[in-house]
Image: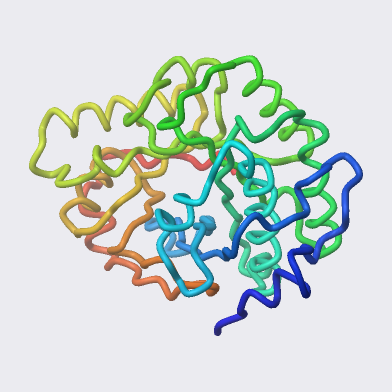
Length: 281
């Protein structure tokens, strides 16, 4: 089902979302874009835990093509537009009726005021009757964080509205354990470079296992990204990870919720001695 960009934009660049007086320029679309969705799967219960919204061009151009148009001048409008696009499409697709959450990436540097810049998101969700407690906001560890206090203020404001915070691409970038210690997110997503061929890399396996134990001690839900083979899935299950995202389970679907290829129960339960994480939400 292709919803098309017309569902997101009226004639011209105006968003189909309530205008927010606090967001002086965030209601303008900086360039054509829409969303694809990829599921985060609970392989233990064979259900979708969340769908991540991934930016795409209007002809399904990859994220890199879209992001190449991002500048210092339009990053705020882009960030606001992504939020509205993700929530609008998710609402049209009936995501809330699936019981899954919606995960949205954001750039802390595009948030000039946590309380002001969240208003368009709140008003869009309320106008579309999309539950606020289904929203997850991902901050990538690959982005250099110049003002850690600013990020913490954003997290405080978002949690006040019932949102969850996630660290994306953990193990790949600038902040690492310091960001985990300061932010204490509800969710931590392991970078795909850690999960790649995990069954053949004893050192990486030990790192993942230790990270899962750390998350368990902190009450943080751990998600593995980039899962492409059954061998990787089994290795991750041996570490106690139950939430996974990757091509093995489903590729991103353009303006649609994809069909999930759930693994066989024998693959999921192959490591019976590994305790699975208890989900925080």
